[in-house]
Length: 222
Image 1 (cartoon, one colour):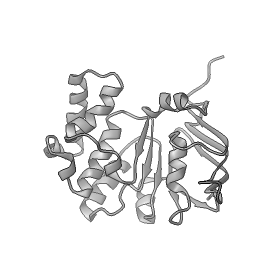
Image 2 (cartoon, helix red, strand yellow):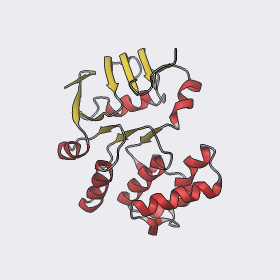
Image 3 (tube, helix red, strand yellow):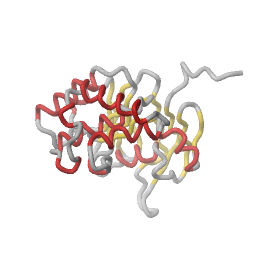
Image 4 (cartoon, helix red, strand yellow):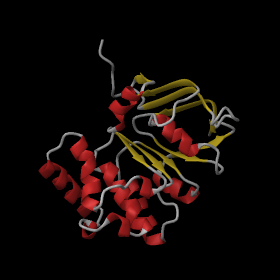
């Protein structure tokens, strides 16, 4: 019998624990579920494990115990995680960790090219996206010469270019000027895509998500 993907959760963590160097657990038998239409904010004290949580989902860290399932499949090996990473839009907290090509267009076309798109198709996707985000003027700019806000928008563009099935956003508006923050807020509000958004900004989370969970003592609380 075929699985009904339309009603299946996109992401499930079950009894997941993780600690660094066998010290106190950052996550302690934590459960989390992202449904098809969910837009969930995650808030918590500095160092409580919010970024670690996203890295576990992406397979960049391995849990001490527990299960991680994405698109209905339980994942544990690097190969299994690598097969789903291109379907997830993961935004690093620091845009410099995301952008690695000399120019903006190279950074944004990298994802579509990696998905098998032709160079012409990848450039078309990039140009359309830059126009939609009203940053076409950045197309030929040198990446390392951008401002912090410009880098953040370009980093978001680089994941949207891959047409992900859901987003994992780590502090998308931290340290941004009001104009850039407003632009990103408007962009995310207008997107019809499930997402998990980490932020310390309550007002921002109220704008772009439907509910907020607090990560405290290694578990998620409503």
